[in-house]
Image (cartoon, rainbow, N blue to C red; front, top):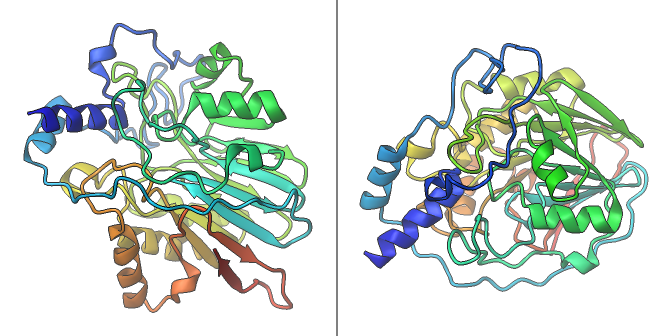
Length: 362
């Protein structure tokens, strides 16, 4: 019974269904925006009006009472790295921090995706998914950050303490989907809200918010009061795409990204996908992530969202094993889509051809 309660709290924290905290102040305020194909004046949806994250409390309880999750290690050894202060020109360095947090360095810019340095992805310090893999970069070793992109409000992606530390230290441009600004403003963090299709220029980059097949919530009762997004970062040396969290759907969202030009690097989630009956509409599995790479026509990909927090039922290393199988079946070279360990680095050097060759180093 104790194990079931612990698993239930972990899942509630992950899916934003903190109904036991429903009396708390909501993080996501209603958005004052014109009605659109994905906003009805109160809640957001997919462009066709469809909803993701429709699984309710009964489904959650069914999962929790029937699940047989694979055992994870208590902790995973990590050798943190110290990144360069800057990477100039068309060379690109992507360092895996953990979960969906990646430091991308190129064109003199330091870009962070969904930063989380906290020990738990949870609204409380005593329960919820606990980090088993330490960050691959110590916070103190981070170079000055210029751009932060946040995909949505789930606790494993929008980590207020990490954003507060980044804001206090570096004053980066922090981009969040519509509806999340009030949460950060209350925490003393200045963020710019963006709608799907909106573009923001900073330095040599232009960042465009993209639709993805997901949803968002912090407390359950605020479901889809805020938006969720992926991002295309348009850069002189080639575009970077960050999917955040997403199901595969029909693949059209990925194919649409090519309107901005070729994708040099796609940061794609490959974990937190079992059981499929509960997770399929909101989280890709590795085979779907490989198909997303194909849809994007991405020269290089990097697998995220695995091996840091035990959110679902697959084993710690299962996403990497399944990814290797999917790549072999589609005859894509393994080094074109690695799932790096925390602290490992992907280096793309500008070469004589249209695209550089990937070099992965620990």
